[in-house]
Figure 1: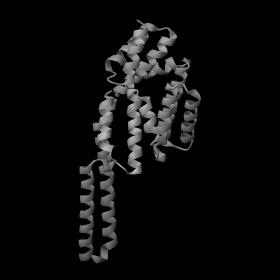
Figure 2: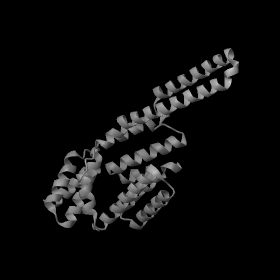
Figure 3: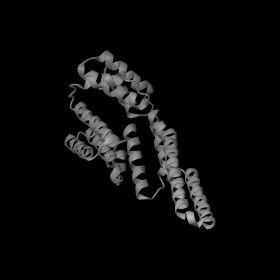
Length: 255
């Protein structure tokens, strides 16, 4: 993430160079303390790196991810393209690919999403690959292949712990619910989405996606008035996401 922002990267190099020069000078005048001087240099450089990585991540979240969270999917895709589209390093290309796949998923361009997924090559990004490909296969009504992606996510979860495992279990839950809805198997889903709607979720994209999906479930149950309420929210605040598009279609169908 540090390499994305030139200004932050320059600060890191300046600090590193100053530490090296300062350490060399200090070692010259205090040769008996060379080990201590080198240790102090290493600590300063490491602490600086940790701080700047955090700054870069916050900057990326505020300037890029916030666009997606506010249901401005095309603006998000444009920003990712501007920041990462010309990167050639393997890790950066993989990061670019999964971020673009995420945006294409939200905007509803499934073929572009699938194409981006093919360029996700870094092991730590494979959860994003399986998550997006499951979404693709569900949309294409290839449920057997979608279930294989779910199994791949479960395999990754079994080898993970802490926050990574929690994220993977969240992805698995999303995929399983998508498959169930595709089959109109809504047992237990109304309680899940009712609970999700009642939570004070600060991210608009999450609220919109939950409202649109809950609206589908309510239609299957025959609760059209409640469904309309959820779908109207998704339509009003969904920006250029697929959730607004789907909500509009569903609203038209229950007029």
